[in-house]
Image (cartoon, rainbow, N blue to C red; front, side):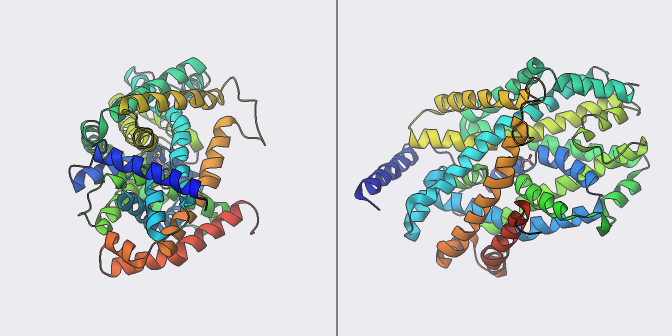
Length: 468
Ligand code: TRP
């Protein structure tokens, strides 16, 4: 490496240090706060919107088992790797990777991996906020009584009307982005902690109320049966891809958020139990969301395999036919909005932490600038459902293309790189110091060195068509 690039690296290394020294970085006040924030990041549209509908499309129980396997042997080890990098590096994702590459004596180009996280978070947020906007708007649609006694055409029309209206969709997305940015600008303790300590308990309480309601429909057994009765004949090769891709998405892997949240975690917390707690909570919420949703769907004689419209069309149809449906509908969409907002903040924080540390900006300026960029990019996703729906690249709209590039390529490759970095490049002593002692560490190290890379590679090669 040339001297020039070495000194440039040293300069930004110092930039990171001085930001840390001037106290721009916050730290979580407690381990619980980290758990709430990281679980808030993990639990999102992925759990409540996507998991139930892909389970429905892939036939139920067998897919759920496959997903649980992906979470346990690939997802949770990687979550540990990502949080470990952040905690040990103690900076924004690019800065942390640079510090750790230096510690391990390898090329500072590894900071590209941190960059990939920052960029992925930025791009993901641009389309995540579109769906989050629909969720927020549905609080009001449900509250207005619009679902009461409505036919399936009426309800399809309501959703179609929202999605196909570029102005309404942009407005709701803007509201979500504005709330997200406001929380971020206030900082770790005043913003993020306050937000998650209201929204996460709120989300758990509403989820339990909804399960209680779904038990009262008398169709709970049928929901359980659908989610846990494994019919492996319904699984295909693509089910494996979908399950692994979703494990990544649901645990917020490779989007910079977990790395950044890890960097705010105090050194004296042992990572083992903390990371397991987050992984298990995320999975439990997805399962419970399914158990809340499917009985309501079955009780009204509706189809579980309705795809992305499951919670925006099928479920509202059910709310419109049921006792207390109007209240239950409002609660459901409040819960979905909480889930989406606590994830959105983890998608914005990596870019903001990078700008404050590396560029020395205030959180206000960094928050406004990044949000402005994300807002512009989000227009492409909003328009993918209306005025640009016929503009496609390889048959994909702008929204689908961003989703495909991030979830299909950047995230699996970043996951692979994180496994190699923490399993093979960092020393055993370094990772051991972060994870803590015991059999948990040995299992983690075995999984991250062998199983995770091989697993991701196999799924990835299959996805691009090299394996069949
Ligand atoms: N995990 C969130 C969900 O399930 C989405 C999310 C937040 C995310 N941060 C991320 C996905 C980082 C990938 C990477 O909705």
